[in-house]
Image (cartoon, rainbow, N blue to C red; front, side, top):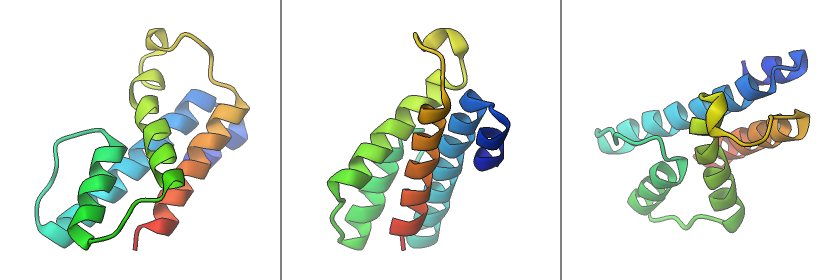
Length: 106
């Protein structure tokens, strides 16, 4: 869905859905691995707990993407919370980070 919003030029929506997709994907993986659900919107916190549980180390690039997507939770949802408008580059970065999480977790 995030890619479709990007294609149509809806950049805040593309970032919002990329963040949400990564968040719910990681929450699902945590439930699968631990049986528990974390109550957070922080992609970095979800990744950190998952990787610690699996005994794996996070790459710097994955940490950077997790932080970037976490920042989108508020900014893409509440237009007044972000000082700059979303553009195509922002949306492409959000989707790139979402895909990186999908391909590097399991």
